[in-house]
Length: 84
Image (cartoon, rainbow, N blue to C red; front, top):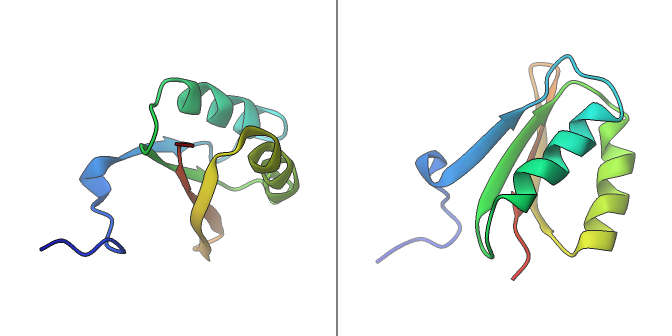
């Protein structure tokens, strides 16, 4: 039996854009998502606080799903699921 709320990090592609400024984090996120298929997950790590605004617009336009986001040690984490 699997727990659908539990996500194993070995099943998630990670994109670390720490240190990059707008528009690079969102551009790299779009590129990584273009390589994935429906249901795949991408963890984006960024230090750019303006990413949140661009990212919310991108999600609304693209249909990808934000599963979870959090702040830890001055880094922002966004877990995304590729649209179905």
